[in-house]
Image 1 (cartoon, rainbow over the protein chains, first blue to last red):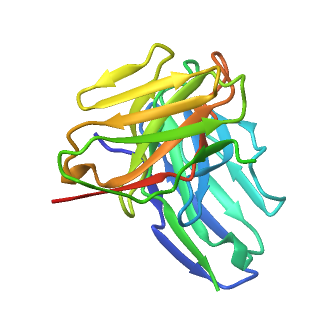
Image 2 (image 1 turned 180 degrees about the horizontal axis):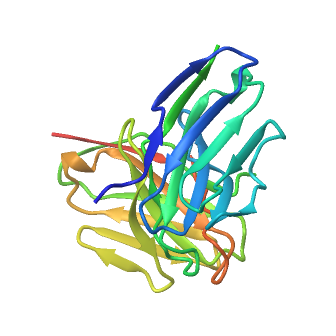
Length: 116
Length: 113
């Protein structure tokens, strides 16, 4: 079946522009996560949704970053007034539920963001 | 101190070798543990969960030492296809909490003929 999809796969933007990154989780998956991965590092947690509720946004670096999942399916991560330090791979993951701590998270291919 | 620490490697081993990766975590309340595998330019994928009693999946064996806050992964009879980055992952939230995963930086493995 279809896995997690993300779009765009690559995004190049100029400093100061806003960007919106989209995540389409696996159908039926209740939990959705956003991570950021720098080169040579593991993914870093940004935020988590259970259905449409954003239950943890402790990993968002600052208030330029926001995320939403209005209908409990597709999610958008928005970065306002982008800065060069925002350049990274942004990954989305989904899991069937969050009720078991061993529920597997399935990752999408990521969006490579480059801020010039 | 990072929450999850791993030796970045790279580990360069011949086919057929046995290789072991180690990982330490700082949050003693962490309840669930995993190894993910990430191929170059690809997304991370779950390799195996790590249970308190240790567990094995084919050529892969994972061990957990809660007292030392230490996780290990052993790969026997290495294959060329095992070449990848191995990410040590900890869920600090515990059972009943959601799966906020904390990733190590990864250990690179290169298996050569």
